[in-house]
Image (tube, rainbow over all chains, first blue to last red; front, side, top):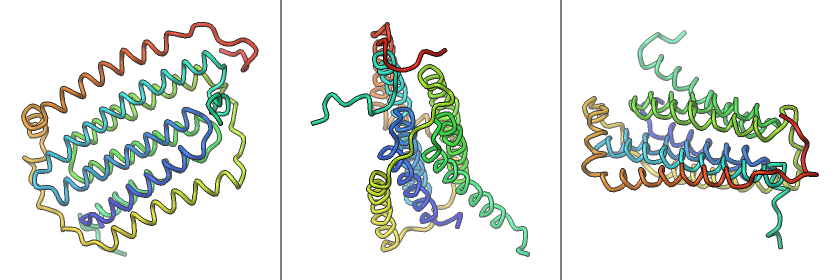
Length: 103
Length: 182
């Protein structure tokens, strides 16, 4: 179990699915951001697992994982500041308050 | 009772970490109060960092703990404290809203699992501590991955400046919407 790639791939796809449900289902912006972070973590598990099991040089996979972490940090910073701006403008951070562009 | 070999202990640890990760993720998605979601998210992040550790990548595990738990989760706590009343919980969604989301997510997982089960994967390559060392990662970052490394630096700089600019711009909240608190 520890030495098989399938375990980690199943874990990461399950984590990705849970994050996807979070993004699709929740209406609170912070909760949607949590879902996105969960999906990014699923990707990181995948990268490290393939680095361990299928990579020629395991360093490559780890460097990619670090890049994903960096992008996740940038995304969270911008996302949270947008959420705060929305709260200042609207007084609520539910997506129900953001529907000007709804057809 | 199974014997207490290193392999068994490893398998137990991995099982615990997987349960922790998935349970935390489910809590992070399903609970109705955002603060509780954040606690579940933190649990899940500890589990993911542990999984990275099990895979042999100490540096990535440490960075995940530092950035996801110590940075992103804490920043989210601040955002929640500044924007949501503590006792406010979300309305439950209707079945008509829950069903499509579950279908999409389960369909995705099903396709991915089917592809994984129908393929064959290589066995683990022997663990070479040198290749997994921080030294090797740093070497790669400044040789093969120099350009992405610099691009990430610019991206982070832009994200910092952009987030400050976005968060500063609107000063006064719209009166009449939302409750006053804090």
